[in-house]
Image (cartoon, rainbow, N blue to C red):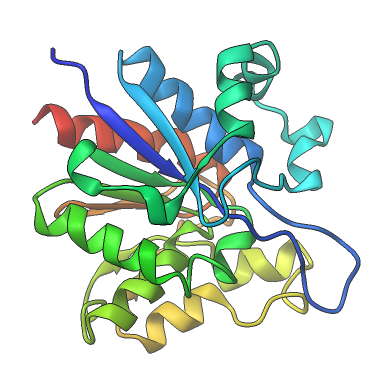
Length: 229
């Protein structure tokens, strides 16, 4: 099986609204997929809108949210170096990579939702027949795709962090919009797990989306299956 190059796009945004709490990348949504790709023998490149080290959501580093992949990352000097030196999005070319993966954390609903480089990048992947995966708040990046290509989200089947989950984590008052509502307003068909916070993914053609942190590993596995098909 030939080596594949996977691009991961992380948020650069850390500020929440009406609170001193910080956000950023939800660590497990980066580490779980990262090691799925590494263990499949793939090469992974990390990127973000601003480049450098992305902010990490402090909640994702609390003991109850620590995954095995997080612990592995803590001992992995190569991965930690890559995480501290992400490539700015505007320096990337889609043709170098076989697929792209967007972890969540609340950050993407601010920066990646509006980032033109990101929106164009996703379209470049999909137009070239390459799969795109986004998890939790990562699907906010699809709003930028819609801005580039009006009507693109119409009838797309998507999983994303649900309004119920946003309410349950107590952050619905700290975000500029509810992601599920926004995607539905743009014409997407948002599918959710019957029980909040359980893993749920949707595969719609080359588009893989996951609902929440537990969906990150399964979304990466689904992306690998598309690459191997």
